[in-house]
Image 1: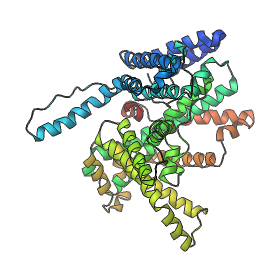
Image 2: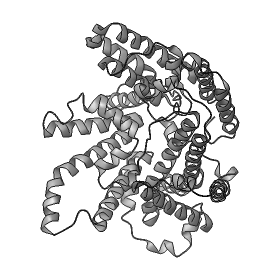
Image 3: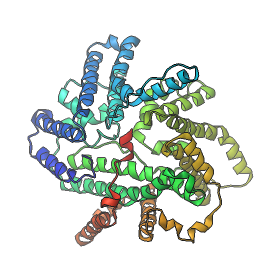
Image 4: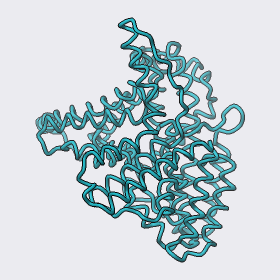
Length: 492
């Protein structure tokens, strides 16, 4: 089951309704048991065996948390910390990285004439990267003394399995989410309406935009030799948008579901493609993961406290690990390193750019200057995303090399209409991108559309709500030709 599945339209209302009807005494014990059962049912509906890995990570991290909470001396023992981290990461390491290690060993052994080892071909449990890092963050926070260990096993199980977050995050912090399980959550019409609108925006991004953009992107990337020039340029730029639409759609749905039930989840995106630098982009993109690596890797490595060179090395390391977290392939590692390289080069050239701009009389606060910075940042990120999307490193290189080919006539000879999207679909796609851009700019200015709508007359509000629902139902990509694909981040 996933948020876009028809079964979810039955599961979620039943889960929420029973949750609100159950009594809330003893720190919401009955409510939390029900929500925990629902969350495990939701996760097991994808594959019942996956629950074993979720349960393993839950029990191992729970026991280690108790040890850290009861005996402070364990917090200072490096061997204990090492064992804790290894055991928590073990399922993730085996299922996600075993074949990656085997492939690289085979490359070495093949060159020296030795035999090769067979790959395990294990199926990666959905969400394992997310709930593993959630558990690891909890343990490291307890170890640092930032939070107390959680003794309530139901609360802790729910913390790792909560169905809005278990598949693709956000990677919640225990100090932020666990206390909410003990708060009083009752039916609230305004909160439910706000949550529904967040979910509706997520469905719009997924069905109307992400799945539509994917048709063009998938065709070009799968046949990169056949579509040079404009095709490749558009595919590269569209994929940068697709991955945002897709992941943000899941995040908005998760936020909305949490809002309906009374939970305040971490917002994963803050209009990343309005960023004027790559540093700013990563402050706005996948915020829960970025902050995780900042707090648990970048700062422990020394952050920016040990000199400029060490700071740059730390940035590259963090982004390389981030790339490896996303996928067990050198493509992803290169993608991570490239993003780190962008930040390092940007930092090195910052003062020179400022001096050059001052000499040329450029005004950094004017619209044109900011627009140029935003455009350059978007192009850099789109180029990097190519390595994220391509099946191999050489495919990514070919896609970027194809962008240098000159064939603008394809805009006029009708071949663009042979890429899987009809003229109407292209119009809807471009119109929707403009709508997302408008909403993002309004949000950047502190104007929240749904709050403005909520302040209007009843007839206008319902007209808006019905129009929004109809837009998703009418313009979404449905049917046998366009089955809604899984969220991209389910693969990580």
